[in-house]
Amino acid sequence: VAVFALFKRVFMPRFCALGRRLGRSTHGPEWEGENEDRIVKFGEYVYRLIYHSAVSVYGVWYFRNKSWWDRSQGGTENLWIGHPNHPVEPGMSWYYLVQCAYNVDALISLLTLSFTIEPVNPLAYSSALEFLEKEHVVDENQRKQQVLKMMVRSRDQTVLWTPLFQVKWSPARRGDFREMMVHHIVTNTLIFFSSYYRFTRVGSMIFLIHDLSDVPIDMSKLANFVKWKGTTICCFVVMVMTWIVTRLVIFPFVICRSVVTEAHVHMVENGPMDPALHDAYYLMFYMLLAALVFLHVTWFLILLRIGWTLVSKGETHDYSEHKNGEKQKTS
Image (tube, rainbow, N blue to C red; front, side, top):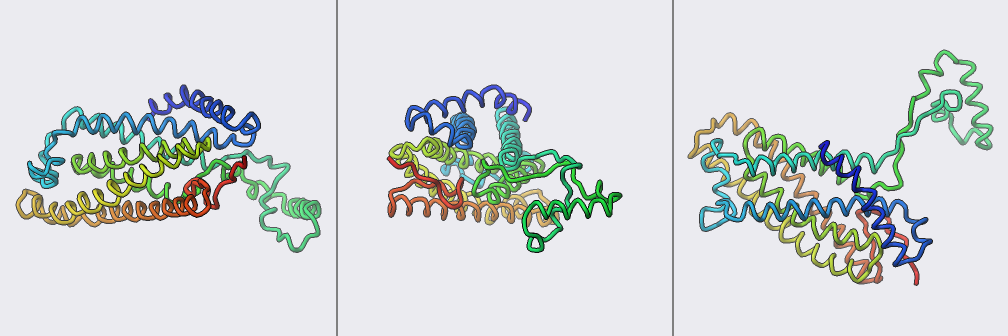
């Protein structure tokens, strides 16, 4: 996680500068002043694109001959045959370690981009402001005067009323913040428990299909951030096709099907696992995987909404970033 944080600290300003130059060259100098939040997100998605591209290339290369990806060698049955005595090669260990660090950093980044923390001056603010109903005052000045009177009457409690800081939504927050927050929590939980219970094979499959589908997502968002409409449309079409194949077909009907139908057979019925151990954790994994499927469907509905807006209005709106749509640049 520290390595990822250091990488972002060094290169993120350069990525944002690239977005600033592209925006200025495409839309003029006034675009920069009106789209600072968009520039910050551009830098974030350049970083994500580099990561997802690199880890996808490594994953395809490393897992190309693995038996659980090859149906002629048994396919997904090899996820469970021989468990928990699967050898964990150094390549797999590093793959899991890097993925874990990235996802923890992604959770931290989501919180950083979504919230701002502001210090509070106890002499200028009291949380009594939050308890005084606005409809009983004529204007804000009268409201503050009444708060000061309340503070004087109960000065011993004023310190307790006054927080040291305020947490507010950031202008750069995502429109699908709740979905992304749930996704990161579920993903990090799955990473931890799949590593703990040595389910690294199935975990690596989930990693790879997500990374492959994230590449066109990142490219589409980058194109949309600088409003390159033609490039955005091309990337969007590739993104939707990749999303359907990886997250709506392979994930639920190959990986999750194997978890539900093959795991018990090869680990318990024909394997050494104690049925009590299997019964102790299988519901947790089922619920986490079901949550991912639900999120994939939810985001696919957002993609359909984006596509419908594009076809019906000719406008590119990223509803995952802006829940109510984006201001369109008029030419």
